[in-house]
Image (tube, rainbow, N blue to C red):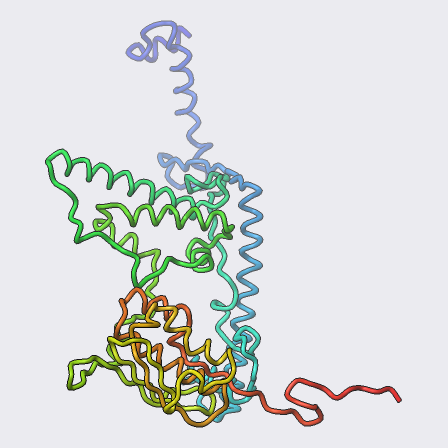
Length: 395
């Protein structure tokens, strides 16, 4: 130790740091151990430490599922491309320019189906549209979740509810600031849900990539409607529109039946060639009226069956116009149900010009404005009728 103090008098100041000086001295003298393989003895090569990264069991399970899903999707995409090429060759079309619209038309031509349910008909779609997508990893390699609502089990859904609640608090603060300055919210800017509807449960599940129960979906509808009914909801139009989808516009329905006037100033609307099976009808509705009904020069007694009479009166009862309009109809072809359905279709379209848009929307939802394409099913060979079979006898 005395020798060390004589060699380094400036570095040694007290007894406490003598051990540290000795350590530094030893490290400097053994430089050759750290630069093995280097030509320059002054260059030290740092030692590389091998650190094993720990992966949680949740991450391992996710990686295994993701690998299986990706391999499955790769196989499905490969089979889809092969099937698309074979289908194009069968139709005599270039496979490179064979679009999805061409695929649907080819399947409809090669595999005709009379099934009414679209899910029961044959189809060929890209695998990404057939198989539902999988959620990405929601946690890191150590198992720490990314999302603050991870432990709710449905983080995306509860994140939407949290955003709705946050926006509602912001609107309340904004409304309070207006009322402090004696300013009322503009009633003309208040939002309504007319012409649109909320995302269905299936659409919301696709948006969140999570399974939702009926109770949870009802909770979402209540929350978003509360936000919509707020007096200052017009500030969040873009946010609310993300969870709405437009309904069929009723503007074209009203414009398709122009209102004309008689010489005495009475409004009327005429709809011609109203179809139902083999029957065709021309219907004219006059407003105002007293409830007079004329079918081929006769009254409601034109139909002997009660069901046919109820079909004609249903649109008038639905719109509360039973004694406010007069109706003249001429019908030909078809049977009793065909004639009644054609007249009902014409009356419904004529009434659209004399009722409010809200009533027109209710009529559309009730199916009064939709053509009825059903027809009598043909008789099958080897059967008594379309569906009825002959009585089977063993002997």
